[in-house]
Length: 222
Length: 222
DNA sequence: AGTACTAAGTGTAAATACTACACTATAGGC
DNA sequence: GCCTATAGTGTAGTATTTACACTTAGTACT
Image (cartoon, rainbow over all chains, first blue to last red; front, side, top):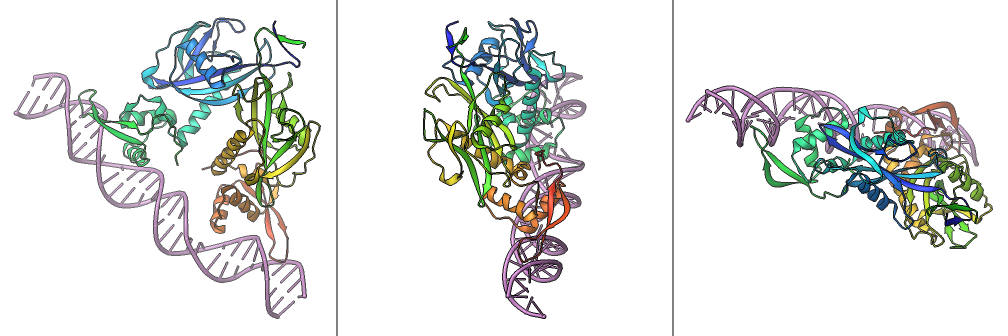
């Protein structure tokens, strides 16, 4: 036990709640735990902070190691630290909220995690630690940000049609939207540019393809 | 050095950015550091997490020990963890954002801190660690929440007049507001109840006294 | 070539919300 | 009773949001 301190130190981990849209529903990325405690149960991807590593780098590294997912939108969510939240020792978990576009959701189970899979939010399995609470809070953040930012764009590939974008909003807000009003609103924000291309997908009129003018920046709107 | 671990552990601290309204301006509570590093410089109140203590409890405890301030609105802000943010060792700081009402702003310097004082936001001294960045983020949170929640109520005593409330909004938003429109808007939210009392303060018509219907709950509005 | 099918794309009118603006009411001090 | 100071109130014009239905442009099939 070579790492000694004058006062007791908690351990620090990061955990990430990654959402995507699959099969027209919001889904969450979970890993099956390969180690005790909670061996065999589903949990958020995450793990221990290395001593010279930035918090966000840790979250991205663990996510990539355990699930193969990288290159996503990520922001800090909340830090959980109830003294009894882990049976091994005192652990502070800095949690992150992330979105992957639907064109990048191939996952592969990694070293620490026996298995990794997308789960529908309404059929989540029982979860290790306080991860159910973390997911709850991540869902609230997503719902709130949908209303006042362009975070929904992060769930789509770089180019998309207005119908596809409308569908994202409809799933996130769980209501149908009027097509004309939606298009008027989204175009009035001046955040989209036409690519000039069209997408033909079936036996009907092709749709114009758009892209976010500033794809990596989540804008605050209204 | 009796506390030993198999892997290196960072230290965890909490720091709190406490705002209040004094002298018709937004002010921030700072302590002068009594210890190295940055001895003698101003910093946010805060300190090391005890091993069986909840994060928020730690923030409140350190605040009370160093400044005497307690009984306030507090919420988690962000967790800062750049590897080089403290010269002593790796320290993760879970930061909090807090507001005290103007009737509770007596402070007294405590044990660790040589001195504690309110500072106007536009005349802040040079700050220890990355605390300027934390304050920056706290100010942004306050400005944002002013627009979509009833957080401003937390800067007033339990009972107040509509003119006093309007004044809080004017300071926070840094613009004058129309009296009639403000009153129409705030009353239409149905979050205030008249106490039936009136406040006489000077030789003019007395003002009705109101209270928040649900004073401890910050509501999301609009 | 013509017809059926499907999703893309488009405008207007009514309702609602927001903004600008000025006078009357009620207390204390003299 | 008159002065002073802040409390308290309504309305009309403007901007924003909502509700709503038909035409367009492609493919597939005959």
